[in-house]
Picture 1 (cartoon, rainbow, N blue to C red):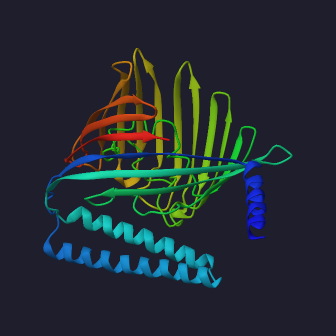
Picture 2: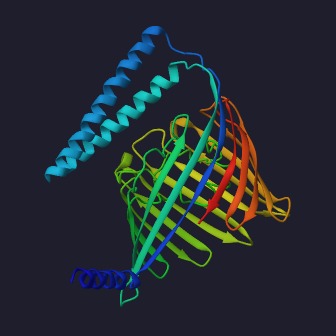
Length: 367
């Protein structure tokens, strides 16, 4: 009887999956990474640094307490808008105090060679209603391993925050762990340097906007709302979230093989991106991209990037970047050699905007 019941349950489960579209994709990568971080001299007096350290410690504790209140009240079913607003304000204060401390407190130089790896499994599901509306969701399981500090913004394991969507024709509405109108704008990721990205100095908006988060525990991401509309060569994307009360949008248009885009954002955080623009297309054998962003009090960030084939299975990517809030000009170059079957050898080197040097080499396989 148990065998029959199990078989019946399996058939029901299989039938429900067959009625929807479920796909798995992702990649794995592993290799070595070298990072050289230069020493930074302190710019404040001992008294100023001590005061900034005290402020940063206090605001970090206040932010943790506010986040704990949100978690407790969520579990108890008593969460209020005021709790969320207080947590957001505390987090913003902590970020500002930490940035103020970093600005005057010196750091020691360091260099290291470490093993680095990542596994990402992406799950995309969707179902279509009788009226033709497609409903779906995206979730990721991701884990990073490194001998050094985990890559910024990608720590943790487990299923990340889920993005849900409804799509009809050229219009898609998403909620939850949204893509974000600024990050999703053409030109923000003109290349993918080396095996690991090597710091992403070629990303002009410098992560001062909402973005889809691969972080684990289901809590990462902006938890916002967005609408994406496309018609032929024109696309429009608007998004909003409670993170720094961000409201953003971009418009992009493709003409004669070139794509131009303009993005704007309103935010309560002074260092968030305010305006950004990009243009990209082909010149001879090279794809070239120029992107600029006004990142609030962090100033302008400009990137010129290009990529081109140097053989049937190998391409080269390169960039040069400048940012008002960084001491040096950044530049980098890499290679990607296709081994077939979704596998590739990748490596690159970058002189960072901060003055350090990063390099990596390894294997990536897509599935």
